[in-house]
Image 1 (cartoon, rainbow, N blue to C red):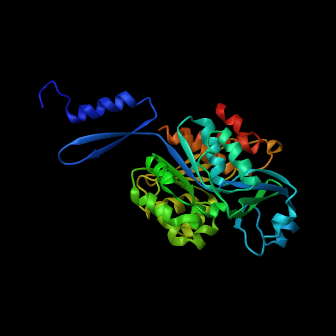
Image 2 (cartoon, rainbow, N blue to C red):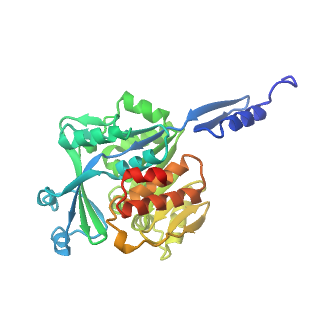
Length: 360
């Protein structure tokens, strides 16, 4: 090179400076002979289950009749399927964990985003598609003619909520070339461990293709028992992991990490799965949020809410994820990510709708 030519490190530094204030992600691919820069625009793909929530207030006797515990999540089976018949005339709303998170994310950040999932060709499905399209996230949903749209029984008892999920059409994920094009173009992928039961083959292909940041939610404690190897694979190949205390303790038990102290348990499981660069987030309701990274645990306090203002807890954890991710993909500090997540979750607890989040 002549003295007037930019040397490779200077080229890299110049491009990074030029694009530092944009939503472009810089990927550097190095070999022994050259440096090449590939700029990938931030594009976040959420993969999940668009569902219709049926919300009902119940008492302890109702939960006991179906052997359900407060603040837990279940898949539908023959022991609890009749719940949907009992509560069919109650309030309905668009739901699904990933659905809730992507709606919050879309309101907070104007990054390109796609939501991949399946609905039935029925009234619930059309309502979900129409409403999400108005929010800029429904156009990629796939219609499955042979299945009904999935639904969730959201059972509220006081401030606690119990979920029973019938995935319906969202059990089917026909990952055609159109879907894979979006997945390949993604800079970030977010999905729940519930997706293991839909298409673990899709998860493994995403991991094997590489070149993107994978963020996951542990979903529910029972998934660790139902899919131990698959949950471990997903955790091990993720850069960002969300979960509540019960979910993280279930994952720790799966790997024989027995600590009474939650932080020690999460640090231990993260370290044992190559967690040097992984960020692990533990939500604990109205208690502090724990963030584990680089072998250490940080604690972020949650400002107390006036209990009289809390409407219900359904979707608050999902809202936290959407808020956190909106800052994370923008490259902000973990502290800013957590603070945004907390504010959005508290807004949801107090009955705020998704329009409120644009000002968070």
